[in-house]
Length: 351
Image: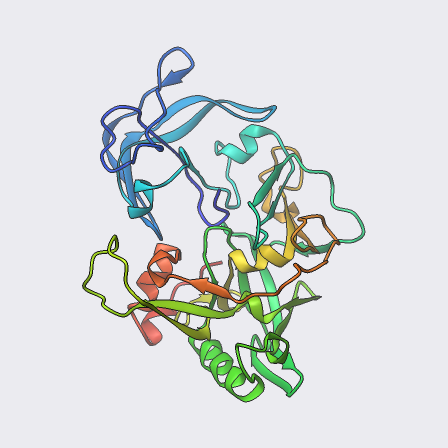
């Protein structure tokens, strides 16, 4: 379930190369399903590439009581994604700002919500209740992304405060498919310097600064557990993964340097999975099955391990993340931009 992509992808049950034993479960048979055909179409994700027939397949797609009749989708016949070898999912569901004919309008719901607690399974609530007074209500900038206006980013802790960007503003994309928080190069440098000046030790989480910012004019705070942690590093890199070996842990800033990608509001940020650990987030299509981006909104409420909006009770023991860098996921277009440093990666607006 990925709010940073847009396509619905299923995988053939038979002859699906590289799709893995759990993913290859879709048997498309008439009359409820029609297969695709024609030339090949490939989609790129942060975890790799999947390909299928350019002419879409179609089927009745149901999520709980919601059904999109005759929904078109890419019927994948191959995947070059290492994650598929152990994956338990059978489809990739793009939940970016929808257009007519895509899954979200077809389901007929207005709201869906996401919460990704750090110590339990994540939750997606389909056809959720309308957000109440305890939520912050953010207008979505007209685009294919769930983009909102971000201002005033700064680190704040016991030893002071440091500005880290978004002055006068940035454009923030809310993306459940991104492993970490992505920031501009200028912010990454300021964050690194600010952590060195304001933080004491990763062994003392209470001494580390929090990240403060505003979205749509509303105040938000992410604790250090959302962006500081440990990278794992093999001591003998050439050994195969199935052989045990000592692993080093390095405490670092867990953010992704995205270069200087631009939006109409300024430099681009991606608020990835760590954001959804601390904020219950409801995506609002504006109306049931609506596709009018001028009426779409994002509603957020602080939460904790319970995934109950407004319940900010912390887990008993606050722990920093431990991350294997080989398992991190970022949108493919971010990786492409990072490979082109300098002015060349800031010429196209994301939204």
